Figure 1: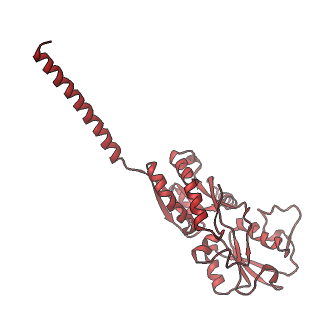
Figure 2 (figure 1 turned 90 degrees about the vertical axis):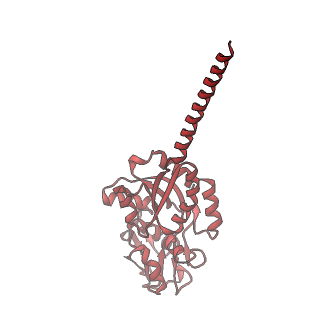
Figure 3 (figure 1 turned 90 degrees about the horizontal axis):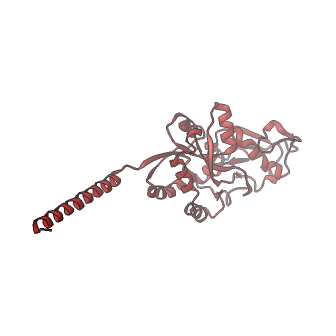
Length: 279
């Protein structure tokens, strides 16, 4: 091989390597400039949004940007998901979701349990349910899916009995068989307003969902006169449209929210038992 041919071969090889390097840099640049895919989740303020904040950095590593939209009521979150304004919501349990779907002709589905918030009874007048007087008035949620849940307090305390064959989860007020103290359970106040009812000293007792209690600075364990058992079937879940349940970003969301990081966060930050992992 002549010297000139050797030089030409060397220059050709160098140019090839240079072009390949430029191509790789271009690909690296494209990857770096790629916008993360957004996952929009509607959630109650506490503890739902607090838990989702712990999920953000996990999803960032997977190339997703978690956008949390905080809503403090029980109707808006499902409608936003149905209408496509959000990819998922995190605020409800299965009995509520089933009832909402039935009432609205929708088919949202739960794709993963996250935690349980034990419901509790609060009173500024009495120290236990058994202390409630005759003709006592107890305020509870307007949510029909919660009726069986709060009736369980009175059944367990021996204050009422349900008609034979009644499903405790689906029980309604009309399913009460015996009520010796003639306790009135008033379901005319929206769940998000029950804290104010308790703080105003209305009625003899008030049953409050833990997310609203926590948000108002109440401790379900320290401030209540009765607390739901930890084996409650009312686990809070992530709900989505049925056609989205197998979407990679939804799967990534569930994997992140059911991670050991999130489990440890719940256990470390809600040591009073007001929030318990359900996965």
